[in-house]
Length: 638
Image 1 (cartoon, rainbow, N blue to C red):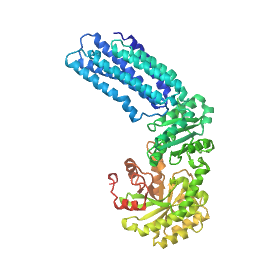
Image 2 (cartoon, one colour):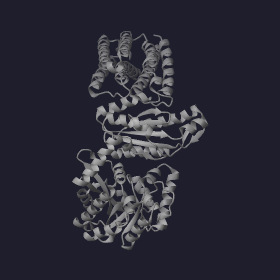
Image 3 (spheres, rainbow, N blue to C red):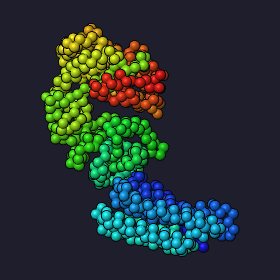
């Protein structure tokens, strides 16, 4: 027995591992399987050396160790045949996952083979054979050869099944590779003393890397997939019927970086970005669309999951990136789309991609996906808004607000939902933006306020402890001259006192206050209706409205809370925001509360109210009443 071939094979495998680790970048399924096969073959080589050295010592001092090493070695050898079959499935596409029936066909023989190996090993150990003797048993060798031959037929079937994707030339090449690999393995099984498997399989891995698994053909200089793969990535996910999120990230100062740092250092920043994005979630794909544009495809469970993932990405971009000793904050713009909710088919996706260069992204801001879907999508949404007003498809949902002092739900925020019979539930933000632009927001606002007042009065919410309902006022609404008088008349109609309604006004409305806005605010205040400053911290730098407008409540935007997790500077901003609000004698509502850790932090800051998914998502009126009646105080709030 000689280990020379094993040593040479191990050296080749180590070189491949180092090269492939540096070059592979993307964790595509085929790359992952190839990498795993390299490691498995390296383990076979090391076990060959271990068992060989034990045999050369003659007397075995540790028979159990020697037997375990031989069993593992034999098992890994037959496992490699099935691993190659799995690789063939994955290499047929950039995003191919192994289906259940293929998994059973590929791995069932391996399990049977393992049982067979253990049986013959145990039998040999029981009758006092040397630990490596069982490997030469003719029945065991025959069974394992049959398993390997079966895997060859499976590999051939896989190649033929995916011939259109692989192409005729690659299909034949891969079948020949499977034949070569299985033939070497059969020779090793028949002549177990001839340690040739590692060396000849290492040569096969070299061939695969040079001919099939070429990183430079798949990946660009940032280790992201090349642009040509984006259509396959989206189409395959559509075929699975599973929702997914695509985030388009534009590096707005890419050209500035390139001019000041040079191409290589700039690409180092891009490689760091790509490496991070691939870790966002399993089966994420990162695609380089242009020098300054990256697309990320991420599987999701629901819109809430989408929001969390997008928040995570934005938070990372609020931190510096590195290129060698250089550190830089990158200015980026975003566009995101949920499939199939916002982009229902490939035709819509082609429209998005075709219009992508028209997106005028701003630093740190999200560009509305509706603008890239073109007039058709916008026309459909506008028709849905008109239909909703005519047919009553709008519905008011309520998100509970928990009081830390009373230790119960004391209020709720009213939120509009449009559930269209043709388009389903429309995304709220683009729907509201379109309604404002087209002049329908006043009708929607009137509907919401009338419905809130009716709901509070008829359902006697005060009797179940709901002290008030928060109602959002858009910038367009607060600029209407007689808004305050009209809304006070509605409250009077339903017999509601001024303490039962709290109006939320955004920073943008407050900062752009004109005579009508000021008049409405004064009229509400003089009649005892309280006001909240909504979405505090979303980007406006002029804070004079904090002492010029009589706000009783400050609603802190969720981005400040989420950004404070793991970011010391953001945490300082959050804490100082609370101190400022408390000194101004304003109550604080924290939006976006989702975890116990967040609650514990906010309790230390003496936060007055919590609002977020930890307690409840927005629900319709009936479910809201049920929630309040059945509310159970969480342990963390006790």
